[in-house]
Image 1 (cartoon, one colour):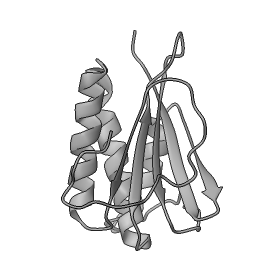
Image 2: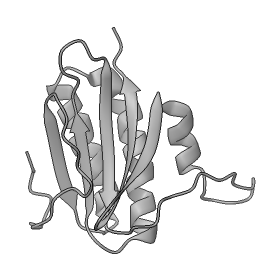
Image 3: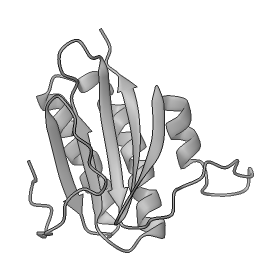
Image 4: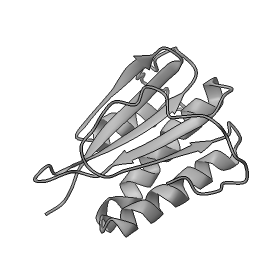
Length: 147
């Protein structure tokens, strides 16, 4: 499911692993509009899946990771959601880019405008991590599905 976001890219999400459950993925050009576009599709997909309760936090964390990709990578950015299958109660969210360097969580000084994105992910998600790939990396996080 790849909505038209103003351009077509022949690119697949980097570092995709096999998963069970429904999956939705998108690719965005490395342009500032990618952040807004990613928030919109994530909220829309979660609404379609009946997971509205996760929309705000998932969109916020995706925004942080897509922003990180924009700051450091020059290629397309992939966003992927995997809805839990069966009794699993975890939503998997992945953001991929072609830069092989893995991000590092750091403590930002009070006067710094950036540097808090991974802290926000680490504190808000039930789990998170990174996965290198031949052509880049994936940063992923999991959110517990309420109920």
